[in-house]
Image (tube, rainbow, N blue to C red):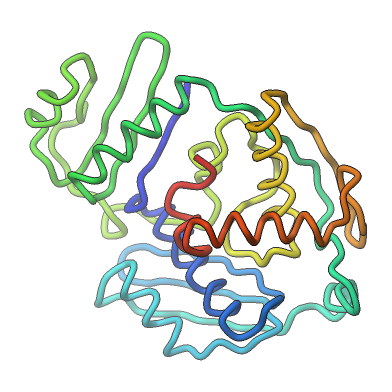
Length: 261
């Protein structure tokens, strides 16, 4: 059983804004230190960044309006990264988080729902959520006639409450609130979005997920702030693996659209 939301779901809008801000930081430095939290809804976008590089409010506002639409008021608060955390990264790339992580091979059901969600979103690029269970498929897609979707998927429960409109005028969005949609059975306590590559929540999660897909076996890892190796691999190599993966998708904003699958 799995749930997937599309890039126009309010929580994914928040993830995408956070990812776009991280992209801005990487345009300033090769290895910036940044963590971004977004709460958006009902005409306001709250943004908090803890960062080693300054990002102008007007650049943040451009990101918000491009992804979430015009007419949204920006509430932006930027603070310097904590000195203790900053010193951890001096001279060498070391693990930037404490945490436990797991990677799990995707099931056929999970891969299928991801394909279905992408297919629907390609035709209807608006807020939507999809569920696939052993004996039931639920499609909730805004800004489309339910009868049209029913023709595409006649066995699905389509829009149980009827035709609807969605987005941040209907619901709020928050960073990393849809990790089940992004990670399937690989969910742990760490969030994928709005963080630089030194954070294990990003790099070790990506490493564990990719290893699980490659080997077909579940992976379980733990690490502490300051670790120079994880899974028997230099941490800087794990960061470079994650960098290559993020770049292959087109950046942190693109990564935030669908997560790991």
